[in-house]
Amino acid sequence: MPGHDDRYVEITTRLRSVRSFCDFLSQGGTVRVAVSDGAPYKDVTAVLLERNRREAEALDRVRRQLYPELADEDVVPPLYSRH
Image 1: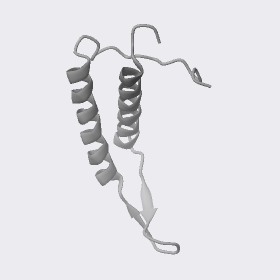
Image 2: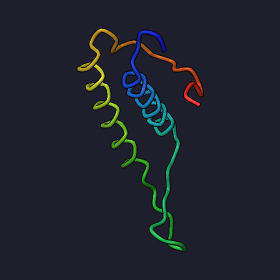
Image 3: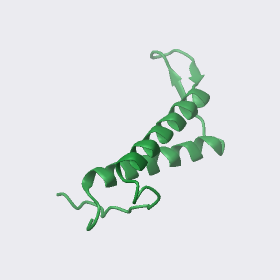
Image 4: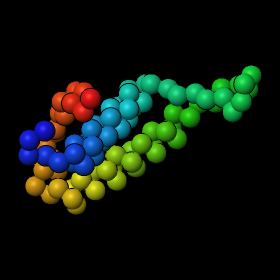
């Protein structure tokens, strides 16, 4: 993408993904896991939401620190550009 290095695009894409997952969970999405085969499922939605919110905050801080002039831009990388 002209004008943006790969690291910026990577951080921005990951940030967008994490925020989207947080939105999904906040709007009623759930995540359940079983510790082992045959074990009952346990709802881990709240834990994952909190973990992903912290990750989004950290990614946002890193992006603002490394790219203060671009931090609020939403870059859309071209699909499959590196094949």
